[in-house]
Image (cartoon, rainbow, N blue to C red; front, side):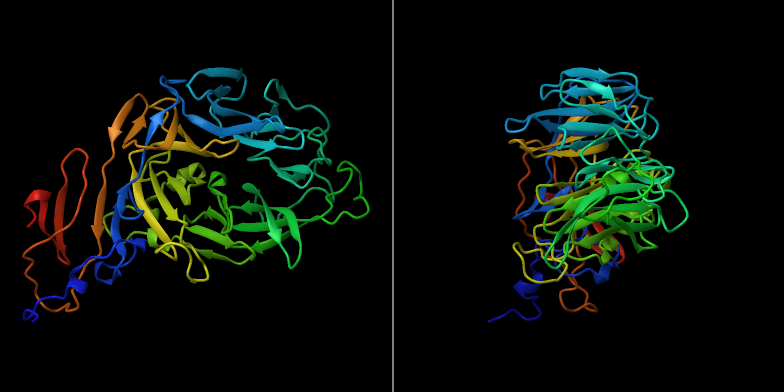
Length: 479
């Protein structure tokens, strides 16, 4: 026989946060399965702390500079070699897994955002920073690229089909087929130009799927617009006065209102689509197989005391970065007055489906976790080729110095910040539960939950709509 006026067990049980973080909704409008706060934790067979980070470089590469560029360069054909490259101060260096540094060049213009592009056609990595002429590295020789119309690339160089593309003040220039030494220069036909006023801000290589064809191409961005570049023939000689027969490359304006000012934020996710952070600081995506985009970051715009995307430092949005790693899409944001990314939000892609149909995992839909705090990572790169499975990161705070880290390190629950390892603080706050009777006053006699805490002290807070009713209560006393 049921006890009179007792809340049912099914209603009294708080479900796992399979729908993730929601900072936007009012407290009483959070749905079952949503969370008000998931600081430094994710849902993965239970609510768990994110993994921490460890130092790859045990001492600073430069005490007053930050890491400005980071990649893993794989080269060598059938027996490839991988070298981790970093840019900081005036240097381009190789950082071994044991942390030792080999300086390749120390003559770059100091402290500039630096981009790396691996081109498998000639087995080299190309380096650009918006000021210096393009450099190259083949695993042995570091060189300044020489030839015809060698550009000063504003932002990343990207490979498309059998050539390279890059941004200049004239537009987007292209190289000759299978050559990095001959480029177009303000050409009447070979230079891609925007339809709206302003310079291009970013480039991102990608393939587009037609009815029965896959097209090599790229997405080009202005601050408030994005374009599609595609074609099957990009011309045989880009320095010729007219296009060669068969040249069919084109640039098309896809949306005149949605662009990016954050070139490091553009990420392609296999089987899902392309994502980036817009200039008004939301997350935008174009699903694979379509060219129609949508905003997916609205739950990260906060209407409560937890800072969300509305608190991103707009003066530093060029430093926002994104990376795809282990079924998470991770974005780093500079918050408040920070000029380096100090907060991350993670999109869980295990159940992500824009069509809202069932997929593997319980959390189908748009599921965010965060804010992830405690790290000051300015650059991140997923090292996933040649048997590697490492997420590397570069220090973003110049007062900490230029360090390289291993992120999401197994069995690690502290964050490396320079030479110091700091504990990760996890905060999980559930949705507000009215127990099916929002107007009825409740008397909470007991709260029961399972919690594994390897070390430290766990505390619980009890909230109602009007705020805290009990706070900082040691777990063993909540009964």
